[in-house]
Length: 524
Image (cartoon, rainbow, N blue to C red; front, top):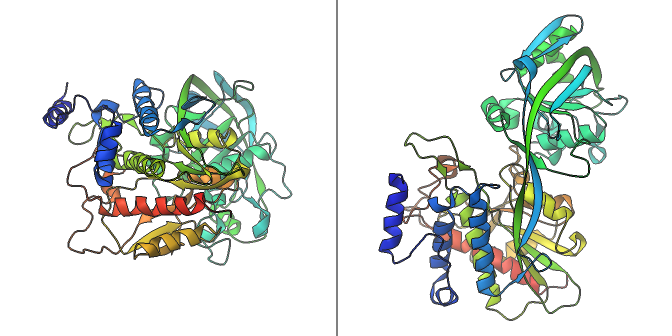
């Protein structure tokens, strides 16, 4: 046992608890304040005993069993046909090009080095990818958006070819296009793969740019060297997926255009303007990858509180349970990525709302509390749920998501991302006003943050959702947040501390509860 674990155990014994995973009993639920419960759930679910809550490890069982038991103690019903759990299969793929290189030929020859010039993988359940003389096509942003009058695939056949596309969308470069710096989903790299697959391409390489992507090349490399995850479809073995997915470094793209004998800078500039026409680079090359893969099962967790209405509609409260597990040590030698803020605090918020509703008169509508798996690796748990919902999507009124809500100091304002899309905005405005606060609708989504949490899979199905973040104007300016997000995000230092400020966290949870309460008894 390392020193960190030992000290944690000593601390829990001193508090009279036997283990970190000791369940909060019904009596404790009644006797504890809301803030005490928020703190206790956050502390327990981020304890070293939960090993960073990585899916498909022994720590998954511990995490989801704890959540299910808490929902059961509160008096909720299992959400999935009598079960607290919704299992689904994931595939984890590690792939590497033979010789750590891709050779291409056009007017000239070029060699792209792995992983300096490109990082590629697959999500197919196969031991080898072997594309013969694959043709490379430059397709601008790789966007087909009729509502914006933009189609990079118009007039070009990309079937069985490898498309090269730019990250983000045209609005990033021209405020008059799309939504300006407020990135649309068309700018997300995941969309690029989805659209390329719909167009029949064999592969898709997304051209990286640090400013447009909002992160450096190292993020692309570190995220895809091993264990690339995807939902596994046993009937097709994922063979209908793109054979090649990947990121292309700007230096690697220059090599492609050099082989084509074309001017890359001019092509990129043209692609940012309306009327751009995609074109073949007239460059070809074999793509051979050796692949290893593993198929394992993971589970979403869910409980439901039945309403007394007859319309069968429900409000979903959502908080992902997973984090990054045990990994690379930090400067202190700590290897456990506890995920206290991300997302033990979110789970605590959802559990508190469930507890508060259970103590109230029965609502008109059903209340569904979902804790998805595998959010960190690509929103896979919520994607699976939305394709196999406990309540049909057309009867799901809204998704109220809890994502990294603590610690947060109390602020006069509350920030909302994704506003302006539905009447849900009005409920948040009213709930904030009842607290003596106000909503600030942030339209700067240039980093695509709105698309990076589970609520967005509900949005894709037509279910209203927004992202709630803490405000920028503390009520007590002498007590600023000691733990701003960049300091702990996806690091072992994201650990619970007793000096965390939960005043804003609790107010934000109560705000979401108030929105849910209004929706639960509404006929709209």
